[in-house]
Amino acid sequence: MIFDSTLRDGQHAISHQLTTEQVERYCRAVDKAGEYVVIVGHGNGIGASSVQVGISGTPDLELLAVARKELKQTRLGIFLLPGFGTIANDLAPAMKLGVDLVCVAAHCTEADVTQQYIKYVAELGKEVYGVLMMYHMTTKERLLEEAKKMVSYGAQGIIIMDSAGASTPAMVKETIGYLVENLPVPIGFHAHNNLGMAVAHTWMALEVGARIADGTIRGFGPGAGNCPIEVLVALLKKMGYQIPVDLNILMDVSDQIVTTFMKKLLEIDSITIASGLAGVFSVFTLPVKRAAERFGVDPREIFMELGKRRVVGGQEDIVVEVAMELAKHKKQ
Image (cartoon, rainbow, N blue to C red; front, side, top):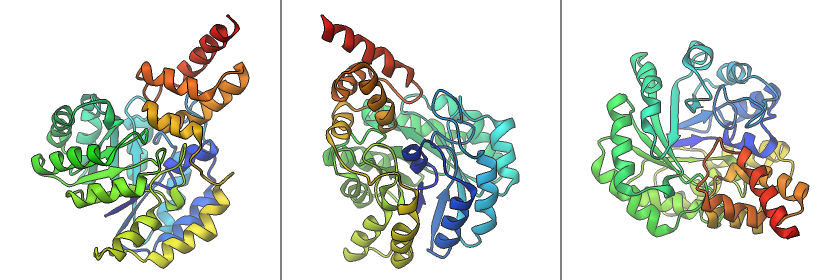
């Protein structure tokens, strides 16, 4: 199964400024692609619009309403991070709009915070998945423990996110294979491309039993981007996988629509490589670049220090603190 996060994770690349017109055009074009889920909303999930992580150009519910109108054959999904999104203000209204599927996410060691959200969706009879982010920061045994909690709350599947693009093939093979062997629900994998391995790692996850590939068209996303869905599907078809997705539609959407969303072409540069090496969430790329320019320091040094501090999503304010400290040391 393909989870398409173009209209969610892609938002990070353009400061969460997708418009209703862009969402409408995208959803209309991708609707006939096949067995597919389109996830829509702020890059950090519905309800996350804030000064801290970025203010949305268009409210989530407006984007969801447009997407719901256009997606007649394709399922509509949302992503929610407890602490940003709430049940009353975000999740309940989204469900009333006709959302089919919900991904409830947490840092890889903090599944407890998802309990009320997963239970809420499960009790509505809707499809709900638990998401564990920044998986490289813990062990496969701890991931299994956290995933089991999510399943006990009602999650029908678990998505593992390589949020920093810090994986190696061996890590993916060992971790995903272990979870597949020990969990009764489907496992998915969401890759980032900071070290140029997003497609390879997603393929590896599928090879060892994952059943869900989460990516974006053209890799549209933070840092060096995500796993480009159309490239992955092409590879899988060439390898003989039976993928019920129309590759030509995905390639057309990539060439004709997603290119118009992008402010610049995605690339692997020294900064995104530093993000992957340091194991720091890809969404820190823009804040790090801004802080580096402001304080006259090397953005790669900022990333390496953030990695030492083991920062996670939501701690973007630490970027400025680190840049100031590096600038101070530089003067000395």
